[in-house]
Image (cartoon, one colour):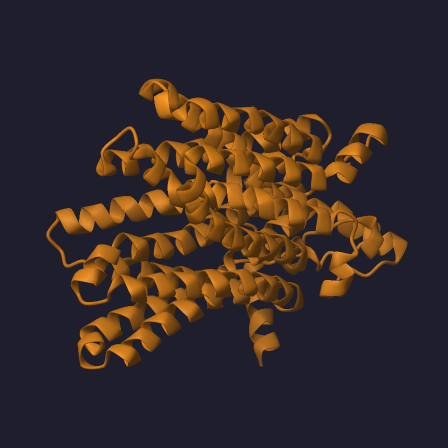
Length: 454
């Protein structure tokens, strides 16, 4: 029954957007739509995630104490990491638009449950039961949110060929920051307008649900679904290879450089998470707490052009993404050393400029590894032209990175207490160097064998 229904949807999608029968024009029109829909998909995930974060203070006032909130965050992080592996595999086995739609609707469900538990005032009637319910809501939410990265990246990989993919994916990875910014603005607007804080959860919940339904009916997973034959499809047909089958975790792990990138990304993502969670605390040395929170956003702002720059430059050098990523990391290491040596006495203006630069250097590699790099790896000749591996590959890289980052965050607090911020900065330098070293074989291959994405 599901197949018949999808068949009806595919018939509906077969009409060209602009009424142009030219195949290239038709494909470009759909590529623009795919970019927008998947961009909004990921932005929606961050919209709901960040709005919840923005109302934590209101939840505390409602009786949901910090112990419950911290366990909710831990449950979310754990299932998000594990869910990345699972959702990537599901995205390769089943229609991606269905997995994405279910994930968005799942966010609607979980945000709704948090509100229901609040309205039931369960935290005051039975604290232990409330603890279980609130943590369970975020435990499940992490699984639904994990569909965003691997599966949307898989759809993008189906639609955009390797040539110039770096720039396109670099622009596309701005989705998460747009979602965070919209969440902050929406929450502020709701509170300033005098509405109850609950609307800051209702708005993203409803938006996610509506957009999830849009995915069910208006997101074609690949060009072939709407009658567009790509060059890759023509080559696959000519060589007799199969593009319809999927690969398992073991086969995906055997793809050259997947494990190297997965391990390296863990260290790079940890550096990013360390800055994301601890930067406001560090900035309180120079600024008051409110100003520190605002100023820390400069780091996030810098991350947006970072992915675009890495993608664009790697396209200019024929897809040598490992070399470009390594260059960014080698520039980041001395910048972290500057912070280790002089951050305590640094001029505030210089500090702000360097924070923006740090965002570019950290954000570029982080954004491009889980998008363009993953898409390149999923098309490696070792899997015989198979195109249903991108979700699994992205899930492995993203999931591995999340687990490593979560473990690394446990070290920051004790390290800062024992050795101050100088110790933390040096530890981050070690992580940067280690992550770059793990990419060594790929970097060497790009330099010596002139390996490209073409």
